Image (cartoon, one colour):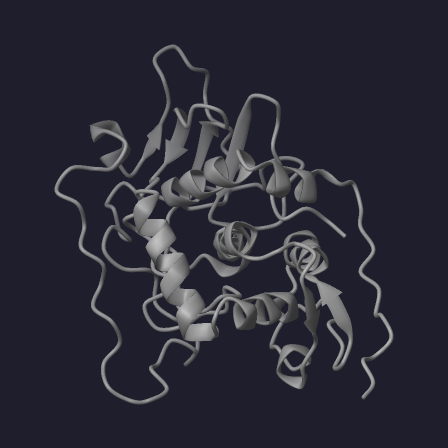
Length: 265
């Protein structure tokens, strides 16, 4: 299993992962980094590629989140091109992400960025908020019985089995180390259900100062109005890595998520 996020001793690298192409050993001939100088995603995310963001009950999708009058984090972070400190060397020209940010893990100070407040779909990196909500409010040793709804979760699954009994810690491991949507579903049920969990993690995002973020699902699967930014992700991971439980969970080089015997009656 791989980590959901990687950190160095001095800093945290955050990128809008769905927009990242596989790493290149060197720039491809003719490759040009995406031009975001016109701030194309200052208000809304890029156009959807499917119907996942159409409200299921009909009606209109949520209105775009308001853009703060003053950029969160300072005026420089309101820019949409590459932002580096005076005297910094050139940024590599083979970065395919349209938005990224490098910040000090301990202080939160931004070292460099590109269009840090651009609004993009978070995908699975939004799971960090579910993890912190669970860490803050659930007993890590609490037993959770897997359900058919957990096992049927769309997308990446870690292997939550119907009738299997798992601790909250085990589910967090599956959530963070393998991005298990089934683990996200099981934890969300313990936190009050899908809608309640989405409301809770959106409240957490607001309290952390994240003004570009609106979660629509606990797993990160696309939903109406879903968005975040590289800057907001920096806030989330700074908060998360300050928690010893989170740091311990994601620092393991590997983890085993076994299917325990089913609960019998």
